[in-house]
Length: 148
Length: 107
Image (cartoon, rainbow over the protein chains, first blue to last red):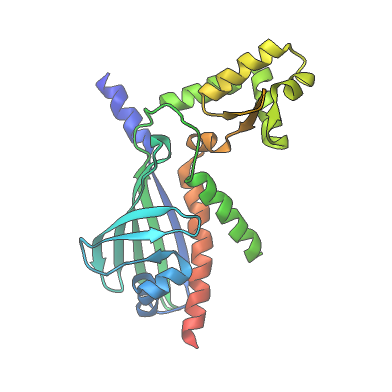
């Protein structure tokens, strides 16, 4: 029983890694990752402050609100915060941690983003979907179409 | 596997039920009568399948006069989607925006 429960829990924990070579200095990239008006331009509306323990929200254009807390800051090197999405329906919840790692290169910066987390236990019966990921990704697809 | 997955898979495993759900996804809200006309099974059978789909959260019903109209709830499928794939696409698109921003910061 216990072994099985452990396996199920670990199977629910996943990570996403997205990396990119950025032709700009780590200092400049750091500003885009930590200054609220700049974060808003590429990510979402926010009330971010670069202080460990600071709680903030990221507000998506689709109406969703992410609950975040700054976990680690090392200027021009590392930024980490929680990225939690609460939904009435437990099946849509997401608890995760986003970590940006900046490494200087000859031509600029290697940017690595790792998001690790899980969807908490999906015990609740379904009550039909309201806001949330579905709209989030529908919206995202629209954004991507416009970008083309 | 979480129970909610089991229920979704079990619900959509039946071909008649899956066909009803697909029609509602493709064509939008419909009455039981309209669905029965092309389902190839009796109206009580269609109603029974719709009740199972509703139980799984895959369809929603709405009374309009003497008729009940059914519509698909695509969001119910979200737990089947792997959030990591969704987030990977999300971060790639946001990094595109980040690079655009960095270019503008030069000026």
